[in-house]
Amino acid sequence: MSLDSITENIDESVSGFFEPIATWLGDIVFYSVTIAGADVPLIVTWLALAGLVFTGWFGFVQVRKFRLAVDVVRGKYDDKDSAGEVNHFQALTAAVSGTVGLGNIAGVAVAVSIGGAGATFWMILCGLLGMATKFVEVTLGVKYREVHADGTVSGGPMHYLPKGLAERFGKNGKTLGKVLAVLASIMILFFGLFGGNLFQVNQSYAQLVSVTGGEDGAMGSSGGALFFGILVAALVGIVLLGGIRSIASVTSRLVPAMAGIYVAGCLVVILVNVTAVPAAIGEIIEQAFNPQGVAGGVLGALIIGFQRAAFSNEAGIGSAPIAHSAVKTKHPASEGMVALLEPFIDTVIICTMTALTIVIANPASWGEARDGESIGGVTITSDAFETVLPWFPSFLTIAVMLFAISTVLTWGYYGLKAWTHLFGRSRTSETVYKSLYTLFAVAGSLLTLETLISLADAVLFTLAVVNIIGLYLLAPVVKRELNSFLDYVRVRKAGGSAEIGGDTDDETTKATV
Image (cartoon, rainbow, N blue to C red; front, side, top):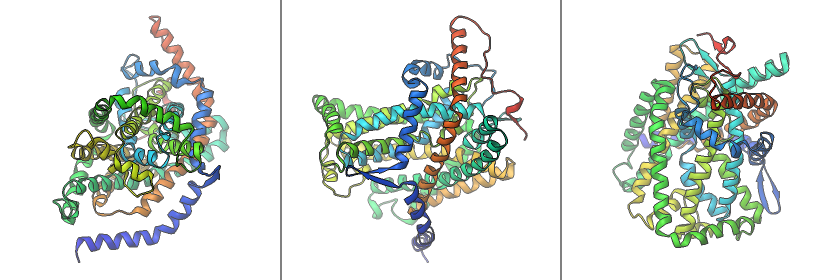
């Protein structure tokens, strides 16, 4: 029996077993109501509403404190004696690497095809709102993290939900928090294996095959797929063994480089067509409020834009606090400030640059997609670049692979923290997880497992429901931490050196090994 037939049988068997479960959960999580002709997914409304509420609650912190956030990333308020494993910049790039990926390249193209150019406007707005949500969840992630005796750190919803709820609501809050922590760990682990790992490897391999001659090319065989999977698994395994320090070391170089090169490519297309820029911006704004050919009109364009932004930057999902919790700081809100830059980079800059490039280049495939033809998002983005840069499909393959690998690395760390919360931090436990995760990377090049990937998406956004309820309940804690950090900043600016509150490094945060 050939490798192709084996993998095909596995795909069919897995899909047959999990499809009813994936369909059932997907129907619940992504349930939509029709308003004015537009299908409105309630989960998108839930995520966007959280951004709106926290933006008001914290007085537009993402606007008022944007410059302070940049200063924190630059290291202006670093305290080298603080517990933690990485600096502010490394924590940011590690978290960004988990969100910047295929969605920024392919997902945006799909959004402006379904929702028209106007979807870009609403995508930017949702990204700006998501900055406030990221600030809240990451502040909590650092506030309630566990600093282990060996210096490593664990954080995320599986830590701040039980600790925070117990602190605010006593025994009942503690019981509820423990249940939610287990559920959060299971959801993060499941998505990490299938969405953050297998799917990323699968899609990057598909792009590689498409530029190397298709199924008849050098990489189109099952042997080529296996080779690619083993190569990615080896790279991921080596970095993953080093923990967050190793991951942050790689992503702190990889993320700025790949994002910079990608944005530079967008700018080349835009500058070559600079005379078309005013008209493109006008089209985006006009179609945001007067879209053509979009089901549901303005509401339809808004929903598509919000959906792309919410799914891209993952604000409110609860994943980013895991990476940010490893930062060296005594002031949780300082890393919350850093985290609010994440949706700005992911959505406001990178997603918007992709959308603007497509609108300005106006490739034929985009027009065909808007007319209802089934065309992949990567193809549309690639065609937009190819109007100016004929060699871009090859470059896009490299970009897709780098984006995918960085995402696999970061979700490997997220999954590890979920795994150890469920099964303990012993060396054997961690080795089992890392071995399992690398095997999933190999499987990613051989299997599609579309049903499991759909199930993983539904599971992850189920976590968003639980997580955001926790964020609402713990928002007063974040308010106190913000005021504490701002007091600290004022003292520093005045030339003082006194520590003011916000210290998460006391004995209550220490965990036993």
